[in-house]
Image 1 (spheres, rainbow, N blue to C red):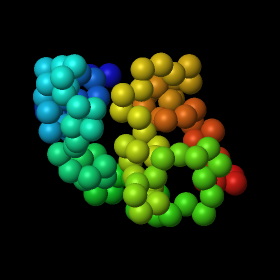
Image 2 (image 1 turned 120 degrees about the vertical axis):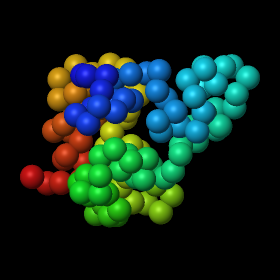
Image 3 (image 1 turned 180 degrees about the vertical axis):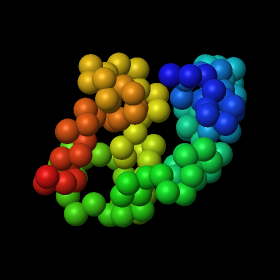
Image 4 (image 1 turned 90 degrees about the horizontal axis):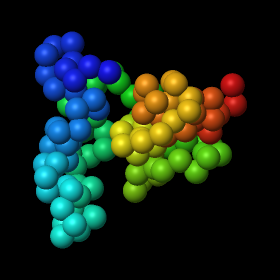
Length: 120
């Protein structure tokens, strides 16, 4: 994965020095032990708005919808709806055996993730 996007901006998914692209705090502050976990998780916007800073308005299958089923108990926002970085993607994904899961930072392997809400 490239450290820059197609338009030349920093790709925060590939460059962990740019936590401040999404988080209110910068990397040095996020690594400090004296900073509360709740403060570390604060984003520059909602869990959809932060993603759309770079990915655009058309990005996000199912975003904003209440799933009819959620077999894997995927995390939803406070209103019970699907969001990008809470429900389907885990931007801080450390390990994944499924190559597609790793490439797209999917919270679960792709088949398991999709079948959590879909029958086919």
